[in-house]
Every structure is written in C-alpha cells, then in structure tokens.
Image 1 (tube, rainbow, N blue to C red):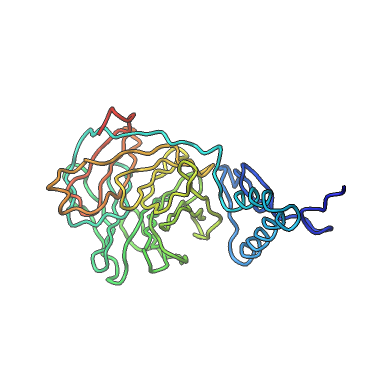
Image 2 (cartoon, rainbow, N blue to C red; image 1 turned 30 degrees about the vertical axis):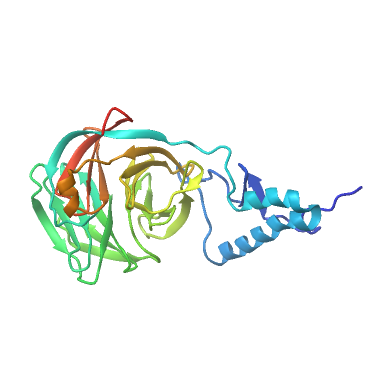
Length: 321
C-alpha cells in the first residue's frame, strides 16, 4: 500500500518538528545573530502567514492518518509537554549590606555604573530619572518626566541611558553625564524592563518574550520565548544583563529568575522573600530592581516604594534567606 504525502504533492512544507515541538521551517532552537545565539521569531505579515501555514500542516495528519497520529502532531504544534525541559536551579540570597532607599521611589529600572546607582521611577506625575549615592541613598541628580509619562526600565549603552515608558510607545535616550535628552525612539506595545549586552538590547513587555533590539535604531530584530521547567514564563519585568545571562524580576513574585537567552530557558530561580520586615512591607510595593556590581560580583536589589536597598550574593538554597 502506498501512503499519501503528509502535504500536497509539489508543495514544500513550512513546518518541521524539532525537540518535540512543531516549528516553522527556518526557525531553529539556537540560530545566531552577530556573536550571540538567539531564537528568532518573525513579525508582521510573514508571521501571520507562517502561523496559518503551521496550523494547516499540523492538522493534515488527521486528514490522512486518523485521530492518533493527529493527536501527536497537535501536541507538538501547540507546545505539548517538553521531555527535555530544563529544571531551574533553586537559589537564595545572602544579604551583605542594607542601604537607605527613597520610600517614595516607585522603582522601575536600576543599574550600576562607575560607582553610582542610576534609577528610573514610575507613576504618572512622579516618574523620574535619577543618579543616587549608594551609601546614603541621597539623590545627586534628578530629572522629572512629562506628567503624562509612566517611567519604566533603564538600560545603559556606552554613554547613553535608555529609559522605557510603560504605555507611551517610546524610549527616552539621555546623556549619562548630564541627563540632557538626546532623543527618543518609538516602539509598539508596552515597555517594562531593558538591559544591554553583546551588542543587543533585551526588552520585556510583561509577556513571556524578550525582544531583541538594535541599540542604534531601536528596531526589533527578533524575540526569544522564555520557558521555566518547560512552561512559558510571563510577567517578565525589570532586567539585568550579566555575562551572557539575563536576570529578571517576575511581576508580583518575590523571585528573580536567571535566564539563558541563547536557549530561552530559566536556569535558576532565586528566592528573594523576607528582605523587608513585616512593618516595612505594609507600606512597600513589589520587588523590582536589579543592578549588578562588577567590582564585587554582587547584586543590588530593591522594590517599588521600598525603604531599603540590599547588597546581596546569590547562594545555594538553604544558605541564604
């Protein structure tokens, strides 16, 4: 008996299986762009056409082979169980020091550069860009954003600070030296977190995807889907890039995740609970703000309306908080 093709004769299939998942042809688990492997996801009309093609081919097995083969194809096309899912390492924090932090600062972005802390704060009418002295918490320089703008994540590229806005559809670009405005670039959707490494700006929008943006044009060049234990991880918030990895706050969770963007997997989950006392928590909002200090190899973390900022080391679970 001669079995029919799983697709019309003469057509080239646009979908293939890889790692137990149905992927559009041309999309691999770790293609490269420049010097860093990234997962690419096409956008616009081509993406829409590809999705339609993917659905067509994923349902063809039902037409030709019956229910059981179609079930296996369907699970692959719709993100069924991943047998090779990475189980994240469970980690904790060891507090090295605590510093004063402005309890009126609705922290959205945090970074460390040349001995100073740079912070982006949010809320309409209260959003700012500021440079802060770590030891005292004193704001050394501050610029207020337009009252209609809700400030978000903060990234540094050379001498330029990139400050996202939540729903204004633009990134504000500031001079690192004097906080003078250099310009702005548009983007679609919401802005949450941003960081820079190896020629790429990583940006979050509250979903389970990290956008990959060009630091000159701010054009989106691709996306990487983030999974934790085989499942999509949404609500990725403030970001910090360190040695090829991305550390991210997860909105409304007392956890920081360590992401390998080359494969889109969470490789570590860091417990960041119990940093504040019960009385401090009553007036504070969620954990948000990660800054890496290369001079010590430690991190600075805080939250929205937190009265303190903590210098911490990442340790094995059970050795910290």
